Image (cartoon, rainbow, N blue to C red; front, side, top):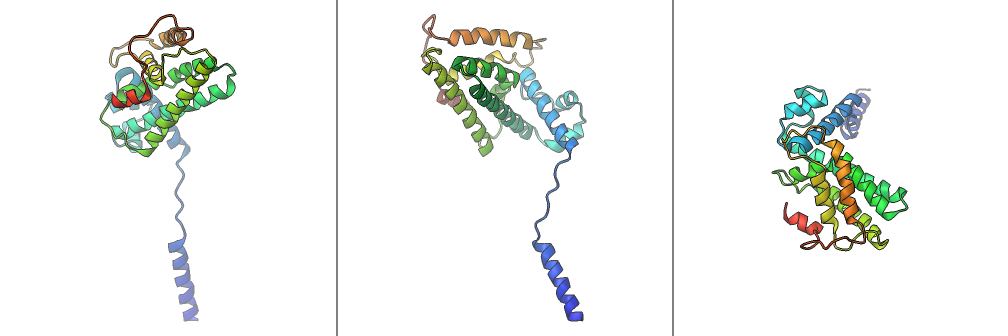
Length: 227
């Protein structure tokens, strides 16, 4: 009897040791808090630059400082999350535009305005800052977004709607510059002008071209060499 008990005890111990541990799922309120932090950071990075105090981000997100630091113990981690979030959300908008718009330039136009709403201007100051750009998820998100931008432009060019002397880098530079005020400038209600100016920019991309552009088209490789 004692031998059988010991065998059952050892068997139970082995089962417990080999059984994979269940990873607890994040609570719904924790996921909501994380999303609020990323959203607030995305907005404030556009307005004030990536060095905005984290306490101010927590205040805009409507959470306590301790909650922010529990999700993002340091600034580089939060910047990384915002960069990936902005690129992923913007890529999703590009895919929707291509899938739902029959007119190639209208798909490009829709993407540009959607990218502004996703705060793509937040990428510019962060990609020139001191944070680790070598994460695989960051590379994957950037490659996906760049490929979609190229596809949108190639479709519009093939349809004879996009001027021939512009490249993806021109679009991304113009988009990033027109969707954010100068960090710390205190611009009030800047958003009301963004879509108006983007429309002017898009009209300038349409074929036939009204003028000859100086210099050469900005490529994606050109943008990478300036990082």
